[in-house]
Image (tube, rainbow, N blue to C red):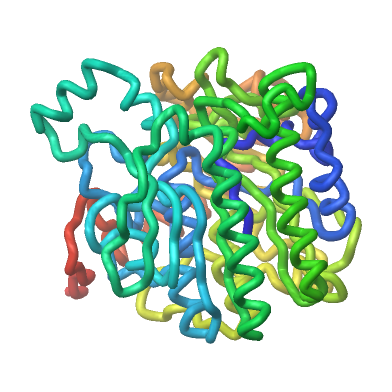
Length: 451
C-alpha cells in the first residue's frame, strides 16, 4: 500500500494531471489500466485523522485523532485500538512501514507499538523539516521550553524495542528521504520473498507535502516545474516497487494499492491541484475529500475498471480482512465496510452510499449518493470557518465545484435532506453508544462501561 502525502485528485495522468502538471506519470497510468480506479474515493480532511481512519477502520473522531495535533503533543492511537497492521500480523503477515506515521511521537505510540514489525521514517509531519534551519527555533529548543518544540528525527525501529533516532529531519534530508524509503521497501520485498512469507508493506511517502522539492536525482527532470520533477520522482519510485514484485515473481499474487491521505496543499507557492473539485485539505470540500485510488490484483479484480461509486478509506480495513483472513473486532464500533466483492466485480454497487464529513473534530455535513448537505464550510484550510443557519446543498453531478449552494435545481430536491438526515441520525446514535476517545488520552485506555 503506497500512501502519498497531500497528493491532490488531479495530479497524476490517470486523473487528468501528469503532463498537464509538467511531469508524465506513465507507471501510475499503466497501473490504473491494470486494475480498478475509483473517482469517488473519500478520505478525512487532514493527515492525522486520515491515517487514523485508515489504520483503524473507524471515523478518526472516535479514536481521539479528529485533528492534527495543534494543542497536545501526546497524541495518536491508544494501544486499545486494533490497527490494520495488528490485524494482518495476527493473520500471519510480516508487517513493515517505511515513511510518515503522524499517529504519535511518544513512547507506546510509534508504528512498532501498533502492529508493525519494523519501521523507518518520521513520526510527524514534513513541514517540521523547516525548523532546524531557524536560529530562533534552535535557541528555543536549547531552552527546553516545551518537550515538543524540538527537532524531528528520522527513526529506525523494530517491534518490542524503542525506535532509535537516526538523524535530524532537516532541509538536507527532506528531498532524499523518499528515495531512502523506496530502498528500504525494496530490501523488505527481497527479504520476504526469500522467507516465502506473506507480507504487508506500507509505504507512506512524504511527497508532495510541503516543502515541495525533488531529490537530487530528479531535480530538473521535467525541465518545466518543481511539481513536474516531484511527479516524475513519485512515478519512478512506484515503478521501482512494481518492477521488484515482477522480478521476484510475486506480482500476480500481490494486492497493490496506490492512494493519498487527503487533498492538496493550501499554501500559495506550495499548493497542489484538486482537478475538477474545489478546495484544499483542511476543508470539507470535494477537493479535500476525494483523492486518487488505484488497486491492482491480477486475476482477482478486473482490469481497466473506472467507478464513481462512493468508497471511504476506512473500508480498506474490512476489505483487506476479507481478502487475507484477518478478523475485524466485534467489541467496538467499526465504520469500515467490506468492499471486496465490489472491487472484485461480483457486486455492482459499493457497499456504502454515504460518508459523514468531519473537518477536525467538527461535523461539517454528509455526502449521500450524488448529494451533499453541509452545515459548515471552509474555503481554504487556513480560512475562517463559516456556519450556516440553512444548510448548503449540492448536487455533485450538476455542481461538482460546490459553487451554487441553493439554486433552482437543488430547491426542487429538498427531499434529499431526509435520507441524509437518516445517515446523520444513525451516526450520532453510534457516537452516543460508544463515547469518543478524547484527544491526548493516555495509555492504558479502556472504554467506559455502558450504564
